[in-house]
Every structure is written in C-alpha cells, then in structure tokens.
Image 1 (tube, helix red, strand yellow):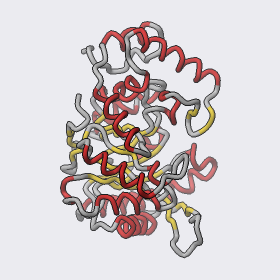
Image 2 (tube, rainbow, N blue to C red):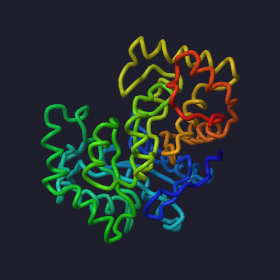
Image 3 (cartoon, rainbow, N blue to C red):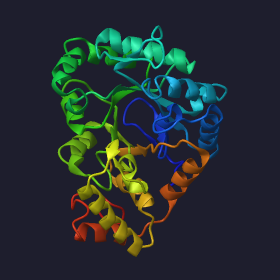
Image 4 (cartoon, rainbow, N blue to C red):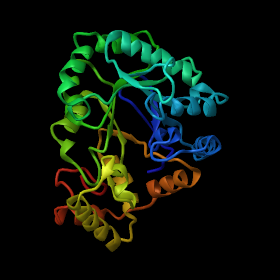
Length: 326
C-alpha cells in the first residue's frame, strides 16, 4: 500500500489519497506553529504526493483554514481535495481568540460553508463535514443541537449543497461513531471522518457501525490514528492524559510490535486501512519531519503474523479485518 494511491468515495466522484494531511496542527493544536513552518509542511505533503487535506474553522480559530488556503491557492484546483467542517461559526467581529458559536441549523450550515470559502480563498470545498456533534461534545445539550440538524434544516442544507454541486460530498467529522449511526437513518452520508474510534487501541465501532457503513457506502476517513499520541510515543489519549489501563494496553501492543521488528506508530497507521469501509487516513503533522515520518511508517512492510499475534493475545478484536487474512 502506497501513501499516494487513490481510492474513490462510493459517491461524488471524489478520489482521496490513502494518506492525507490532517491540518489541525497548522492552527496550533498542541503548540504554536510559525507561518513559515506551516507553509513548509503543506509543501512537503505536496512533494510527497499527498493530495487530500482536512481542515476546519475551529482549528486555530480559523488559522488552519487561512494557512491551508494560502499554501494551496497557486496549485491547480482539480489536483487536490479539501474537506472542512460545519457546525461552529467563528464570528469575525469578535476580538481574538474568536468564540465559537455552535449552529447546526440550515442557516448555520450554509453560513459556515460560505465563511470557509472566504477564509480558504477558494470557490469550493470538496467534502463538507458536520463537526463535533454528539453527547461527548455537548452532553445534555446534544438533543438541542440534534434538532437543529433534523427539524432545523441542517441535513436539508447538506443535501442542497451537494445537490447543486457546491460541495461534492457530505458527511460527519466526529469522535463518536454512535451519532453518525443515528445520522445515517436521517441523511445519505458520503463519508465520515472518524477520529480515534477505529484504531489499534479501539475497535468497538466494528459492529454495527463499520459494517453498516460498508453496506451503505459511507466511506470512512480515519482521523486520530494515534489516539491523540499515545500510540506514537507520548502519554496523551483522547486529548488528555492517558489513564494507566490505556498505557498498560499500549505497552502490551508495543511489545508485540517489537517482536516483529515493527514500530508501534507504523502498525497504528496501517491497521485501520485493511477494513473495506476505510478509504484514507489523515494523521496530523505540524512540520516536514513529521510528515515524512508518517509517510515512511505508512508504507513500511509489516508481517501479517503481527496482526495474528495481537489477536491471539487478546489485544485486537477477533473481528478486525487485517492484512493477510480472508
């Protein structure tokens, strides 16, 4: 499997490179990134042959979108794919840092889309994804925001944007699969950017969610393949400090990887790609070195026996699709 291989979404005529660039770090996700370093990272992704870039208004409070647009603006628009998000409005009349205002309504989705085009300096985005809706994000307010999508016309706005060609595909960009499963009963989704929920560490989304996505043509883009970094050498998990039970499981997985001469991050990047519903993986990268390392890990040959050993030791769901089986 090569990072630059392309795979089509089942609908919409969009092709994604198997490895893409998650652009949250361009907005300073964990630490500030200088403008020059952000531009160099996008240029390095291009030189590596990556042609899928994911951003959002929320990343760096609009900074990621603005930097990505500036870095890509001189390149031929049909040669790359951009996804961005809707659901938070970042109002320009507010002093920095902008205060995000959640709005999943018909008007809110359309306004978010238009604002993103302005910041990117482009006439279209390819994929528009509903961002961070669900109980984990909104708690007791989830039903309120869910009604904005349903009764308030949010799903209708997505249908209109896709129907008249302003976007080529619509979906969700979330950290919880359950809300996407519910959304699939309300709207035909082309894709889902699922962050952290189908990884070498977690496979609870296998059934019923991933099985339903495969049947329905809801293509999965893997975000957060390192579970916030715990699978890549740090102690962060789900955007916070990793608890001891998670660290213990990571140590056990890492020990098996060492037996087969495989870096843990390489296994983490490649594992989800074997599932037939998965089309792309977008680890974040803040600099050129990280980008090149991710690409090298993504293409590193991994012995199929590694996956079988993880299953035998109860470290990988028996149902998980892996290379060398089937």
